[in-house]
Image 1 (cartoon, helix red, strand yellow):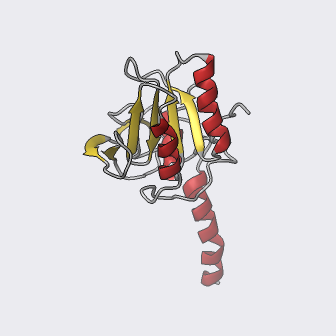
Image 2: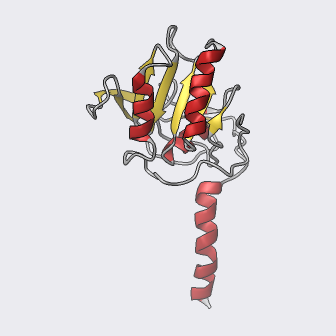
Image 3: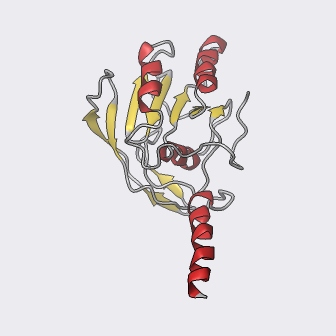
Amino acid sequence: MRRWLVLLLVPLALTAACAGDDGDRSGATLRSENVVAGDADEGIDGVQSIRVGEPDHTAADVDYGLTPPAGGAHDQVWANCGFYDEPVDDEHIVHDLEHGAVWLAYSPDLDGFERKLIQAQARANPKVIATPYLGLVEGEAVVATAWARQLRLDAVDDARLVEFVAQYLDGSQAPEAGVTCGDSPVGEPIP
């Protein structure tokens, strides 16, 4: 009897581990510091290696100390990958990064043509999430982020953007590379 109970409960626990709740924030703030560790030296000029905290699930708001964040504690529910014209909570997107997604956090000030270039990357790669980001440094057009890796660019048409997506999409640095970033109750990307 005990064996049957274990067989019934294990799948439920595994489902709850990544599916979680509806993503409501608890109001508390958790610190999950991201620290730039230096050049990643993996073939693309400018990519920084980021030390991130453990990939724990939390209902709290998270203070990453880096904008946009590149990993650490995150919401139990990921966001659907795709292109957005409205911001999405960092905590949901960090969960996407854990699954091997690449985040293109773009300046809300980009013109229509530049937004179309970002949108094309999201359309071409089902594990890219692209969102406007209010916390970018002045002059930054887009920050490409994967789990523990980041590339800050002042132009959307910089060839390194495409290289970053190709190299880090489902990259070995992601704790759960290969897991989906779709079928979530969080976020409705623009087709």
